[in-house]
Length: 87
Image (cartoon, rainbow, N blue to C red; front, side):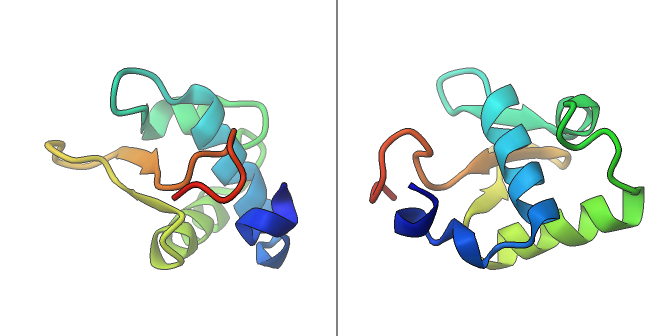
C-alpha cells in the first residue's frame, strides 16, 4: 500500500505525522486538529520544529491540506489511506 500511494518517498517522520493525522481524523470531512495530531503516540516524541517541517512537506506534496472552513490548526488527508490508488 505504501508503494502504491507513493509513501515510500516520505521520511519516517513524515510518515508518522501522516499516519497520526489519518488515525485521529474524525467527522464527515475526516478532519484532524493539530493538538490531537501532536498528542498521538506516533507524533508525540517528534520535536516541535521537525513536526512542523514534516507537516509543511506533507501539504506541499499534496498528501495533506488545511481543512476547509477552518482558520488554522486543522488538516485533512487528501488521499484515502484505506483504499490504495484513491485520491
